[in-house]
Length: 119
Image (cartoon, rainbow, N blue to C red; front, side, top):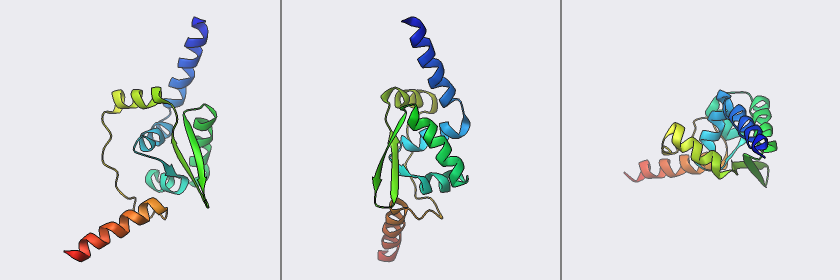
């Protein structure tokens, strides 16, 4: 029984020990995001980001949902969210990512544009 716990913890630390996967998990603790958003935020090629997302999804650390052409990812493991909070500190405010065409960023850019136009 204890061996299973050690194996599970070892796998979790292995997955979270990779810098890009850790950055992805950090971004997802701010809220769900699509691949194009993660790609733009990380500055990495889409196939590489998708490969890391696949590993995290297969391990049960994240989950996904489809909305039209977009697949949105979110944290699916409370333990991971708690660990990230302890290691990385509180979540910082989310900002739209320049160059990202996802609906989340486009809504934010539109809202920011309207605020500036009203001033």
